[in-house]
Length: 179
Ligand code: ITT
Image (cartoon, rainbow, N blue to C red):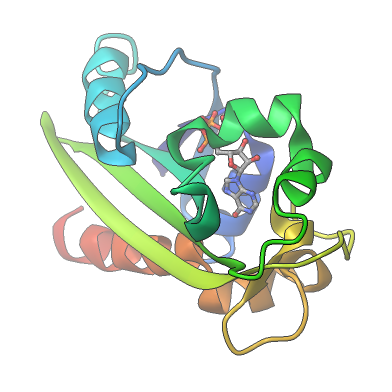
């Protein structure tokens, strides 16, 4: 069993579909303020290693919107809690460039060493929310090559193209080889 440290059950459920050998350690931990997800991951792996025994993984993700200079990016959790999807759609009113991408960085603490795996999914911000599946920004994000949002997809369908799905498949290969 490999430990995923998160307080976000949705992340765990998506990952568990790809790596069944995953255990959720439910913990909300403070993150540093930094310019990149990678820096946040490095810091979190180091601090968590003082309280979590043995090997574990974490996931830090964000939505990067072109027209907003990459916002909400590393602030995705806070922005979702405060202005939410409605607020993002308002900021995007009358914006014709709707390109955006989701990025997941998976941090692995393995035998005392930090590793990072990245997954990116390009797409667009829709003009209204649609769908009830998934979580977070899923109702307003339409992945490239699709006409429906992540929230209108099953977990399996989302995993096929999503940032997290891509990063978790790399994690599966890592674990198969080294764990
Ligand atoms: P942790 O305990 O794992 O940190 P979190 O929810 O705080 O859980 P993040 O720090 O990675 O997670 O915050 C990213 C935010 O971006 C998160 O709160 C979601 O609202 C959103 N998000 C992340 N992945 C997403 C996805 O696959 N689809 C939609 N929204 C997502």
